Image (tube, rainbow, N blue to C red; front, side, top):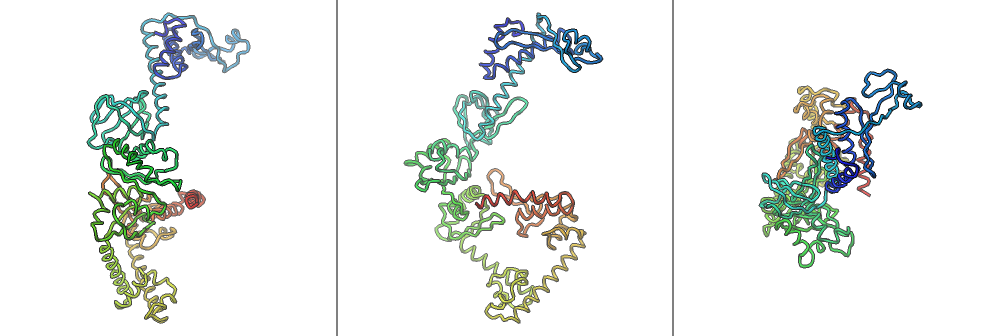
Length: 537
């Protein structure tokens, strides 16, 4: 035991422990000093402030008792009067600490055992800190290890300087390991926990595949080719979007390699997972078309506010099945890769839907304006989609439609305004019936339709709206275990409101409620504006 060793043995023990545990020698010596001081306090009294110092070069041990200089001594174990202190040190002042050297001690078995526990605990904490600091900077790296044991389906991996775990859900399907197997995995999280740092590895993480490509493709490692997006259905299929910074380098060819050698090396590591390498494009429509390969795409319709893309494929050659893929795998991976929701229609389905929308708009104009079918069809064919558009359009534009004149245009706009006034009065009556307070009308951006929706969902005051989250208003989408995304509706579902608009509406309500002021609202919006400017640049 260190406390009963001579001075040379103390340093030899410190050196041996530091080498074995891969921690700094000074940490081991500090642990020894704490342990010896604890053992000495057992001899001199627990309230005595005993300090132990080990010379890191000579190994000499010095014990001392520290006493605080005070005017009136309350605890003689660790306090000394100014008069007594000045006998030992004439320059002593109130608040100073006087060190009193103690004679060497012989430590009994219990004191030695207690000191040993202190050293073991300190060394273990230092080892855990070293392990955490080493691996927290390796999040996002691939590590190699040896399977140490398998527990309840999870694999414990020996990394040499620490242990890591691959949970069952982070392993590829039908993949099994035995003790002694070598394994490569991606470090996706390192956490401090009471029993030591926990290092979590994954073989299903999308970035595991990206890092494998970086190891196999020199152009990626050198930064010539960049991986922009990855989507995986672990163990089955994956898509990876790549782009080249050098026009003379084909990013897809670089990743495939001579006779497919590079991509095959990644496929083998991923237990035969099929990989589609797709050229990335800043134009989202082009990227979506590339991501849906091998299906042919005849038309793409983009809804930027909802980040939704409608893709139209030919009716021939089974293109719809190709685009959707087995159990929806192709379109699901394309959606994950691009970050946009993708709807796939055939040309005939799109034509039928367009016709249905045309008939619906025609019927809406006929009912609202009390006009015949021909007039309703004319308005719909000219691109008008709502009575609101008709009421606000320049009368000259309306009069320029074939078959219309200025008198007809004026009459249509009068009927449109009367219809909107009638709807507005009905909505106002419904708002009052639901008990929505008048102050909510004054929040910028709130419409009468919104007020009714709010009332139907028990949002009746400015404070109620201020306490809402963006998801409460526009809903949210969840994907679980690679399944099809599930859309959960919000209060204003169906009103074509973007998340940014919903967030702005809530912030305006918080200003109105007095929770924040206008200057705070401006400071909230400025960073977003700057970020959009930077992305535009």
